[in-house]
Length: 148
Image (tube, rainbow, N blue to C red; front, side, top):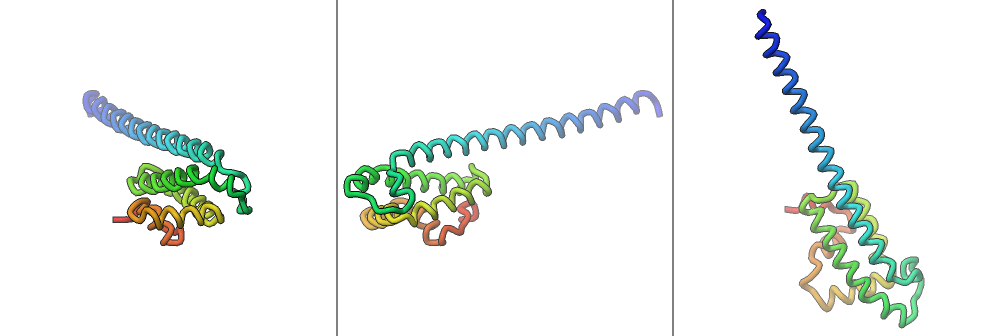
């Protein structure tokens, strides 16, 4: 073998290694971006839940005044949950994150005040929150990324 052939082989191997490193970095950056996006949604969730009385979040009875104060926040939570489902359907969030969120939806929507207001919203507005309805009907055991 001549020096030229050795140089060509070494250059090919170096190129392949470079391509592999670049692909790894792109994948790593994509995962970091997805993590940042999911974290921003988690912050939005926590901010939304702050306006709901603690008694409602632990399943205790609330006063009429507390119920009135929580109505808008719970409606916004339903909208937020529906958006989370849409994002999973579009595969913009990871399956593991989706499973955690779905479990949270199950817990929240079975709390008495949430259940009552969800039933009221669903009855009055039958054509909205279709994704959330579908997750709820599945017993909170579905993956929207698998929906066709």
